[in-house]
Length: 317
Image (cartoon, rainbow, N blue to C red):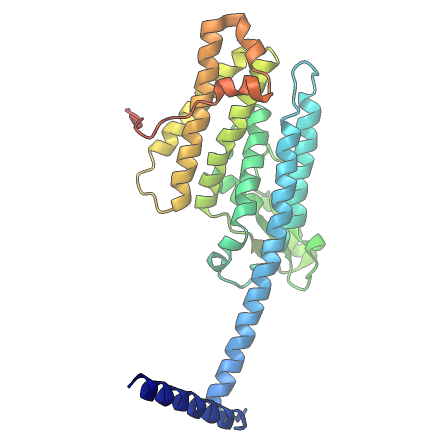
């Protein structure tokens, strides 16, 4: 009985292979409307995938440069009195990202639905928001609102100009000044260059919030480095800011992102490490500075890991 089934199965395979060879010899009618539709769909999908990959490459460049800016900001040391020098250099490099990278993404998103490509540059955008807000925090400035950064990601250029270098950002002013253009300036621009168009690189609000969540890690490192440099008073300022940031994250009720939960966990761990630093400063006093070095043995004193049973008590207003 088993042999009969095996022969029958073998016969079926041979028959299917013969029918497959017969179909290979059939010519495709290119004039068929269905074939033409699928050819058109294939062209559209290939163009979309190519555009997606180009945006991913730009996002990688933004990520690399943003990490370098963060490393640069961590070199601020009150003992060297290099705050102004480092902030000016970071400011120039952030403005270069606006001019050279985000404008290319804005040109790629021209006449496209930007929400179809947000996943292509979400990593670069979050890293940039982390670097941008960390720059503002390190320089003693207020953290910019989402709308202010979105205005800086809006560009205007002539309709007959395709080069990214000719695109002019509406937010060409320094990073710490208002971004609204003067009416007279807009009028002169329209008179000299003719009809202009706007190119926008979408800053998704979710990417902005997730970038702020990454900011907590940099502030925690700044808090520990401040203790190592002997500036123990600033540790309490850093910790207080992180407490306010954590309270704002806890106030978000409608969570629609899986990444948000991971950011919350990372934010809480960074806050606990900063609070542990402040606790050691309060208890040990001047002796706490020698525990604030960056080596593994001393830094392990501040690696407080909450247990799974340690539920968050939440925030009360």
